[in-house]
Image (cartoon, rainbow over all chains, first blue to last red; front, side, top):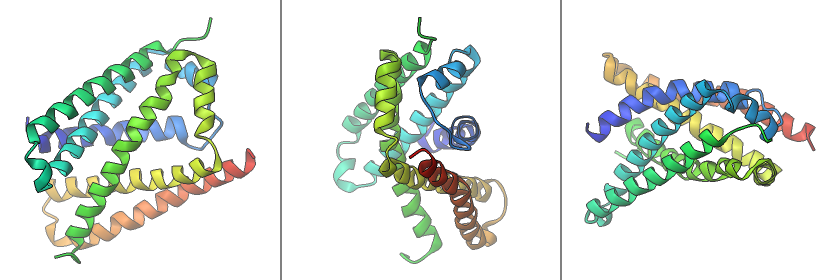
Length: 108
Length: 116
C-alpha cells in the first residue's frame, strides 16, 4: 500500500473515531479524572475501539510527518534512515499506548 | 501560486498535521501515566488543566476541526466531480470549522471559568 492510500483509509477511519472521541470524552467539557475514565475503559469493547483509534491515528500522523519531512531536499537524502526512525517511533508509541489501554482497571 | 486556495490549504494542512502529531505524542505520554495508578495519572492530568492549557486546548480543537474538514473536502474533490466548486469548498471548510470551534470553544471557556 502506498502512503497516500494509507492516508485515505485512515482518514476515513479517523473521521469516525474522532467524532466518537469528541462526543464521548470531551463534549460538553466536564471534569475528568481517573475514576471517571476508568468506568468506560474497563469495557473490552471500548478497549478495542481505542486500540483501533490509536492504530489509525499513528499510521495517519506518522506517515504524514514522514511525507512532510521528506519533501525537504535536505531530508530526502536520509529517506531510509528517517523511515526507520518513524517506524520504530510508531511501534514504540503503539506498544506503549496499547499497554496503557489494556491496563485500565478499577483500583483494588 | 502562493495566493491560490490550493497552496494555502496545502500549507495549513501540513502545519496543522505536524502540530497534531506533536500533540499526539504528548497525549500518549500523559494518558500513559494511567499504568502507574490513579494518583500519578490525576497528578499529571491536573498539570495540563491550567487556564493556559485550556486556551491551548481551543487552539488544538481548531487544528483538529480544520484538518478534519479539509480532509473531507479532499475526499469530496477526489470522489466526485466537483473541481469547479473547489474555491467554494475551500471557504466552506473555513466557515464550518469556525462554527465548530465556537461551538466547542465557548463551553471550554465557560467550564474553565466555572471550575476556578
